[in-house]
Image (cartoon, rainbow, N blue to C red; front, side):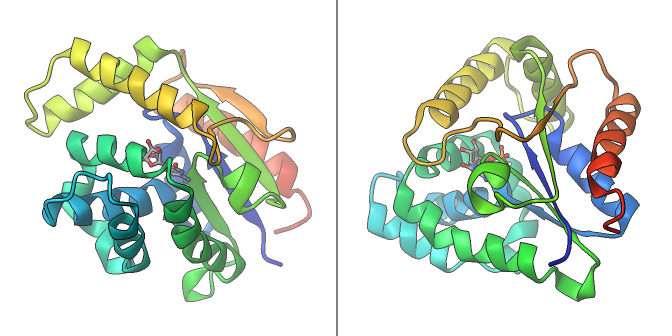
Length: 216
Ligand code: C5P
């Protein structure tokens, strides 16, 4: 088994940036599993669906390929909100499970290991992961980051709306019956509220290196 690093946490906690940098640093393959839920949501939005038709959502999830994961529409706020809604459907999660497990078990391009980020990687998708990080930050810090990101992309949205959406998404992700967002019992917690990207990366790398010690 090649080493797997699970990076979980709420929206805009910094987990994506950290996971991507850890993967580059270790020459591991990287999978943003939120992208799978977003790609499913985007297919539904483009088909004029509102996310309430479970069969349509499952069909969209089953059709996802690596090519869907680079669509710029994935990052839209509407896509993220729909993703969080359909992610609560167990049949959709089941449909995306095999893709994630296959990636972890056999990382593409012969990479020496894999980094997966999401909500349930350490708890459900890869419970046997070598290292598990649970990345958090206060709602205010995450809201400000997400708002800056959207403004930089030219989306006209108020900070208030972003924080409201974030709270709603956190609530849905943490309280759903299917794979709720929560740290694995053996996860290392990393609060990035007071850390810039560099400091957060060094902290993450230290935690992960300790877990990988002797395995890479
Ligand atoms: O991380 P990101 O914001 O891209 O994820 C979009 C949505 O997909 C999240 O709000 C969450 O509901 C869902 N998701 C999930 N399980 C994962 C990754 C993402 O439920 N492993």
